[in-house]
Length: 78
Image 1 (cartoon, rainbow, N blue to C red):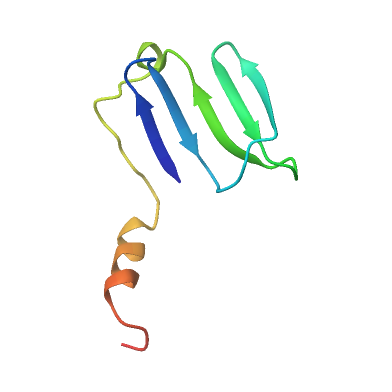
Image 2: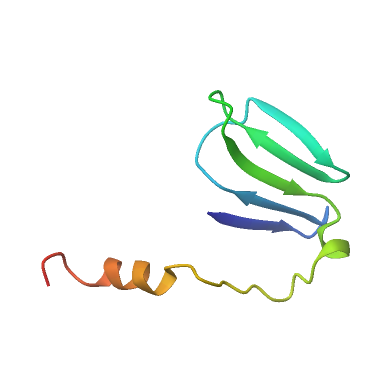
């Protein structure tokens, strides 16, 4: 997952999966879902993001981030 914030347009894009968007749908004012050819959601666009959320802080909960970091640094079989 990748989060990208574009200050000039105050837009936050959350990329959920690699792929090319073939269709988009606004599901709420200023919230757009991007779909791939298999109709999977691959991204979420939030317009006027700073009006809806505090962008100065990112908090992760219950995600295996530490485990993923360790797996990258520890050779397999150790």
